[in-house]
Amino acid sequence: MTIMSEAMTDAKTEAKNEAKNEHEQKPATGIKLTERQQRARRARSIAIAVSLGVLVVLFYIVTLVKGPAVLVRPL
Image (cartoon, rainbow, N blue to C red; front, side, top):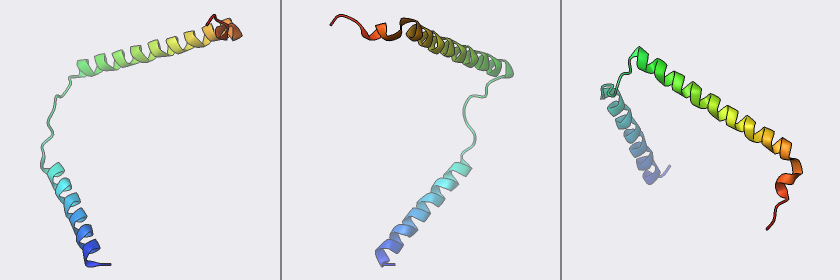
């Protein structure tokens, strides 16, 4: 290895170690949701997923019903 590549490798290693140390030193910050809020979030997520699934199925059924007529339209 050349001197330059060794210096670059050392700098990368030091940067990783500093980032790791900074991450370990920071206390956990943020908002802690209550059990009720977590349940509400999960219920909303499930409702959105079900709605999206219904929409996909609806589009699929409409496409099957219309068949190739979907492509026949005036320009």
